[in-house]
Image (cartoon, rainbow, N blue to C red; front, side):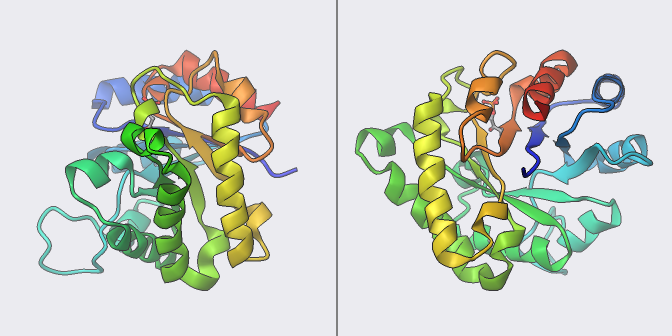
Length: 249
Ligand code: 13P
């Protein structure tokens, strides 16, 4: 059976001191668990977290974004090559907060995924509908359009990505998609991947949006939910560890 992946997205949270104690507790508590885990940290802390995670393979390092450009006069941007210098294994691309606050289009997200793949970094490609989309019955249409842009651009590499379904209305709101609602969308995404690659079963499709210690096990028991992308709960060691434990069962 394919291992589940639990990735924490710290968003714009943390400090040198807080990161050190969070990571120490997570590393201690996750010893021996049969699960892949990652922490996607603010770029400013990549060096710190790389050093803390060195020499172990249970918790991988991730970034929260990557530039769509390769190199040059792009003030404030961080390239895939730079991330690779810090042994970054995963890069989140197309998070709804980037799409919303930084006007990232499907085409930009696809380019970012391409940059990550070219540098040997696995992109975690986020898709998800807003509440208005869902109420208008457009959930399937929106997530398929968002994933199609990446599939179209990245063609043969498509089995090397991770997909994260994050309904926008469930992010940071405490409103989780029910296991049935999430599974229904994951099945749509799996079918879309199957049409694009014979290795679709190998692609991990994560769920994100108010996943926590209490609801993780049920969500993770769905056939097409291969892990979680965790925001708020990844900042509390005990909660993050309970989610990892639920995935390791
Ligand atoms: P929350 O878990 O805080 O809802 O955030 C989910 C998310 O956006 C992870 O990328």
